[in-house]
Amino acid sequence: MVRSNDLDWEQQRAWVEIDLVALAHNVRQIKGLLAPDIQIMAVVKADAYGHGSIDVARTLASEGVGWLAVATVSEGIELRQAGIVAPILILGGVNSDIQVQAIIKWRLEPTICTIAQATLISKAMARMQPSQSLSVQIKLDTGMSRLGADWQEAVTFFEKVVQLPYLKISGLYSHLATADEIDHTVMEMQLDRFEQATTAISHSGYSVPLLHLANSAGILVSDRLHYQLVRPGLILYGLCPAPHLQSNIDLQPVLSVRARVNQIKDITAGTGVSYGYRFIADRDLRLAVVDIGYADGIPRRLSNRMQVAIRGQLVPQIGSITMDRIMLDITQVPDLHVGEIVTILGRDGDVQITADDWANELGTISWEILCGFKDRLPRISG
Ligand SMILES: *Cc1c(COP(=O)(O)O)cnc(C)c1O
Image (cartoon, rainbow, N blue to C red; front, side):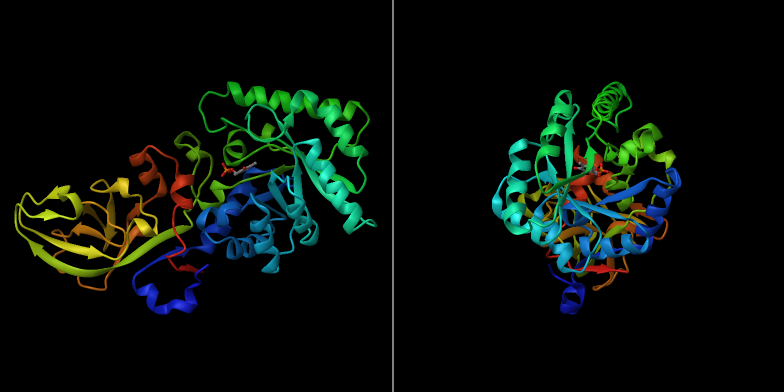
C-alpha cells in the first residue's frame, strides 16, 4: 500500500483524501438509529471499501465500535499486524488448513457455513491450541443463496457444531438480499426465516449466541432487523444504499479524489480530442489536461459523461479517458493555471460530486465505484 508520507511528490499528481471526521460523524448517526445496547460490527472488507482499513479501524475504535468484519483472512491479518485488537469476523467460510492456521494464530473469528469447515477448524485447534477454544460464528442462508447453511437445517447444523470440541459459537447470522429495495417482500421472508431458525435453536435448549442480520440498508429500514448487533458497510463511508432511504440518516461522504492540472492549451473548432476522437470541439475552447486516468480508478466508460469541480463550479470532461490523464473543457474558467487542484469526486465549495453520481451514470452501484480506486493514488487520512 502506498502511504502518503513516502511519496510527497506523487501527491502533486493525484490523491485520495479520507475524512476521518466524516467517518466519526457517520458512526454517530448510525448509533442514533440503534437502541443503546445494540453493538456495531463495522464492515471494513476490501480495504474498507477503498478507504484504507487501518486508519478507518483506528477511528472506529476511538468511536467505540466494538467489532470489525472483513472478507478474507489476509484482510484480518493486515489489521492485526497494525495493532488492531477488536474482534474481527471473517465473513467468508474458510476451506483450507493454511487459512485456518492463520486464523488461529492471529485470533480471527471464522464464519462456519459447512460442517467440513467446522471440522477443519476443530482439528486444527486440537493440534495447535488444545487447551483453548476458538470463537466461531455460524452463517445461515435465509434467501441470499450465497454463503451459509440452509436455514431449514439450522437446528441440526447448530447441534453438529456444538458437538465439535475446541469451538465456541459466539454468533449466528444471515445476510439480506433486498433490504435496499422499495418492495419488502423478500426482506420480510428472510426475517421470518431467521426468526424461525433462531427460535428453533432456542427451543432445542441451546443458548442462542449473538444474533445479527442487518447490513446498511437493513439498519435504515427497520429496527426489527437490528437484533443485538448490526453490520454497516456503505453508510459508514457516507453513502446511502438507496435514494428512498436517504431521509432516514444524515451521512457525509468520507472519500474524495483530487488531481492537478498538468497542461493548458487552446484548441480551435473542429479539433479532435484524445483517443478515437470521441470529442470534436464544436467551437474554439480552452482545454486542461489533468493527471488522473483509468489506471487510478476512474471508469473509462465515464468518457465524455463526467464532470469535475474547479473553484466550486462543475466543468465537463471531454474525449476518451486515458490511462493516466483526462481532458477538460475549461472555457468557463479561462484563468485556470497549471498545478491547480481539480476535484474528481467530493466537495468543492457548493458543488459535490458523489460516487452515486458516477454509479447512476454507469448503471452500477456506489459500492463498486468506491472499491475501484487504485493503490497508485496515495491516500491522505485526517
Ligand atoms: C458487505 C457485507 C455487509 C455490509 O454491507 P453494506 O451494504 O455495505 O452495509 C454486511 N454483511 C455482510 C455479510 C457483507 O458481506
